[in-house]
Image (cartoon, rainbow, N blue to C red; front, top):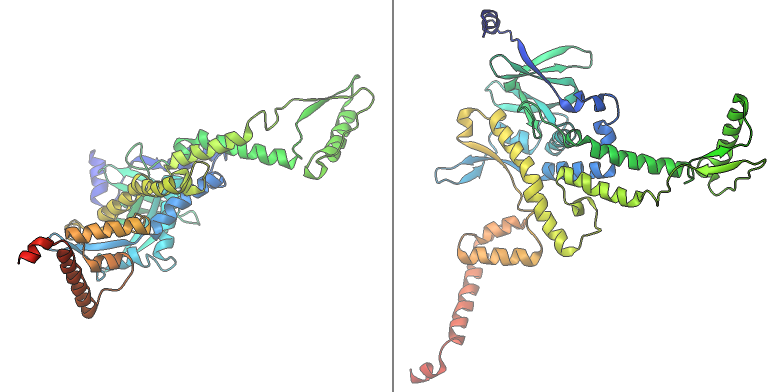
Length: 409
């Protein structure tokens, strides 16, 4: 580090060494308007994939736990961060709305940022989301990150790494994430082109484009007049089905493929699978049931949790530990999503799972009732259950006794 940089750092001024502008806004294709997050999300498959992940992540309970001396854990509702994560992160949003917004921005833009508001004791009391197109990520000479945030009036303020809660999709440089629609933009472009082709075709009355051949030469006024006349009589959905009348040797020749020749429907269906593959979402989750049935749909729900949601849940949990807890706090507290509800399966599988857990001794009846949103057993109910179990055990032993031994006795 140069003497000048050391002097600037000493008085609290930093010099940027790397400008890591969010690539989802910096790519030339996106800058030119070819693909924007909003345009990509106009595709139903992209919207469904983003909704499936962000809505599920946001609706899962995100609990702050306290480690106990016996290597166990317990909820920590007395910690200020518990309310921020589980109830209300700021004055305008509920926890679900905030987490859904942050997760959707991570999927569509590659990054999501929230300003960390701390109380007088240094504990996090609020998280305020920042718009990704107004945030520029910087790496300082000391290796730490900083964030230049531009407000609606064009004023820029700098936040340090400790002041920003930053979620990243998979990154190329470790500083900013890259969204799936940016990393594989051609896939989204193709799906948009197919969608726009269908819109244009049906808007024009599903008529093929073509040319009119005239035996003689036309001047510019005649060309314009004939083109306008043809468009007014035969273009658009309102003119679909009309019969064109050609005279004086005029001939019409098509110059485009029909939707059947272009296999438009098959291409559209394949685009659904392609985009679902980008976000690692099973097609059955987003309503593509062409290859779905009851058996594999249940299994796809499990695959969705294990292979799709787990990465994002881990991202949240580790970012919370890194940004919202102090080094001392990390040794005591940790955040974790509760996914038992997503992995329950049908009633028969749950009953078998619970029965084995209780029989093997690693699951208690009250824990099972908690998973099923049932109240704990009262003392009277617990005694009655124990008596019933003893009676069933004694009855089974009597039925299994040897009749000859009983007679000899």
